[in-house]
Length: 225
Image 1 (cartoon, rainbow, N blue to C red):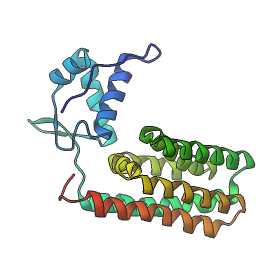
Image 2 (image 1 turned 180 degrees about the horizontal axis):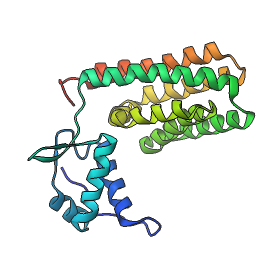
Image 3 (image 1 turned 90 degrees about the vertical axis):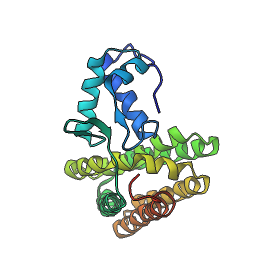
């Protein structure tokens, strides 16, 4: 598989645009797990020199999206069933903690922000705009983590977010799942609004556990993906 020629952004350095395009191709599955990343081929497809491609691959390696194999080169990182289960189990715990502390600390402005994000997400669900659905879902969870005031909690969550993106893409593409997500988000907001920390934690955990079950049952058909 390949990626298309770049759409340049006048406000960003070329290396950043190249990085974002290759990263998006990996996230969306255009560049699949286990696929070798050839600098020359990518540079030709993107219409750039090899230098920004090389820099992008190094940065992607730091994010865990690319692995460098001695004498073989760069490959899109694969993830095993066990890795996915481990990540999702950790996310259940982190989301629960974030919701618990957010219920105690979130401001009225924070609640209003979550409600607006939820309305936006619902609108994108009806439009079947999966890209923006994912963005709003990510905004929702980030806003809750931000409301805890715990920077370490948020950074830990961000460190495990990327490897499961392509599975979240499949989950969000399922209409019934997307509709359920809106309802689940709204229930979490109500718990946060009332300051019911235990309930917020419970709802947040259940929300992620449903996604976990879907991903494992529907997506993990092979030993690695």
